[in-house]
Image (cartoon, rainbow, N blue to C red; front, side, top):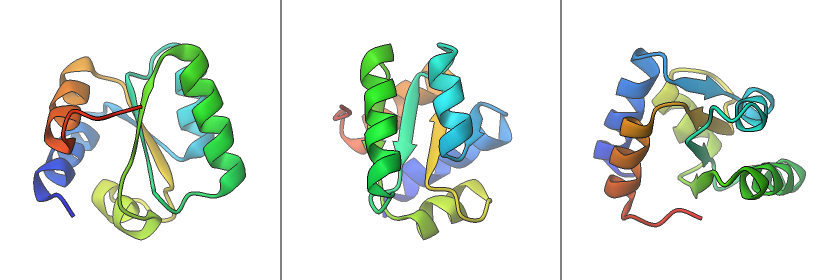
Length: 103
């Protein structure tokens, strides 16, 4: 796991710039407020398809990172397969730490 990425994600959570879960993240994307989606690499196939379709349509980048357990622990919530980042500054920092690659 990338400790810097998890640290930056933790800062975004504390700043109130994160939505939690697939449903809330989809809603954030639909409203045009999402700048980045981070999904667990073991997210369910139907949730993955829905998130990818919504992100593609809205032009929102998506990163697949770790697994549900680690992503949930990083954001301090149980059973969280996806999160949406609302802030451009946090988005750029997370993408840079991740390696600059986001769909």
